[in-house]
Length: 140
Image (cartoon, rainbow, N blue to C red):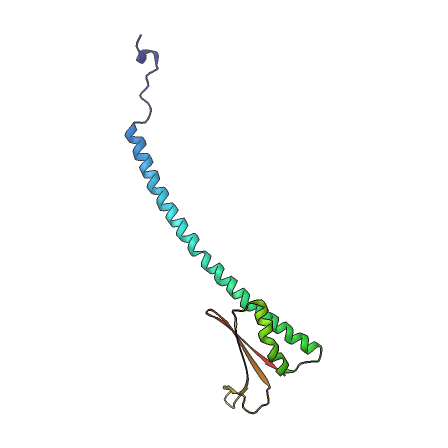
């Protein structure tokens, strides 16, 4: 009795060439999908890093604001003393933040100029880190 008659030899499977073509196509598709996913996951990190940097500088400015409010609540606000405290408050959050403080006045056209009169009514605070800048004005 032959194998064909017993049903042991069956030709209903895949040929070797069909399996090789299937594996090659699956490999190409896998490489394309992996490249697309990897590229998007790498670029999706940038907004998170930017958000973290924004959070750091915003936290520093919020601490300056909290210090200003606490001085007001204690009826102990002196802009000169507050100006001297700002760098310490900011650098306690991140020493790499640049701090610029200066007294300003506004002229008749509402243009900002340096305060040369010594009135010290408006204190301008500028915080910079990388390409992020925050500006606040404080008054006596």
